[in-house]
Image (cartoon, rainbow, N blue to C red):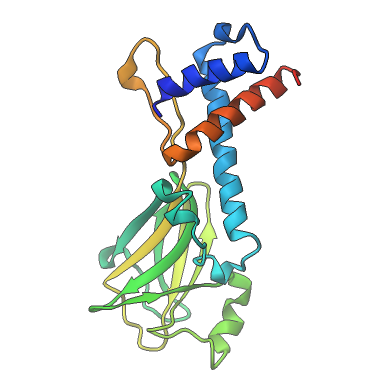
Length: 219
């Protein structure tokens, strides 16, 4: 469903719900309602699929990225040239990820020669004890990731054992922020459509109408 079709449906649904003057609403106001509904839908789907999973299990996000949020599920790559540090505990491998367009990072994989190795995501408070733990400490095949957040990026530290082998690549999977939809009645080329799966679009429009009705105090 295009953003123009969403606007048409919004007005029709609102009229059916008793708002007879809905056609006087500015398109900008409809966009606000739609974007609120889109963001709420994404947050709810993430909450339903992740729940209270511990941080080191965050990559086990379930079916959400492949189904409900499959159009937002992306992958980024960090090349060896962008990885700093010596691989020691004092100077671990480090790299940065721009999170401007990222809602949630769901996992990391290291690429050495021909194999990918899953990383564990550990809270910084647990890092020291984990590195000392004989069974759970970091290794080349069982690496550990910890991260520190800033406003628009995260600083990531990688621990992969005593071998100190820098990976050739690091792949990270993430849920991107959904598009901020825009309907430009004058210049259609400026339109921005919703990038959630099509089967969610009707729900989003209905939720947007409910949001608008609640904002004007109409039951």
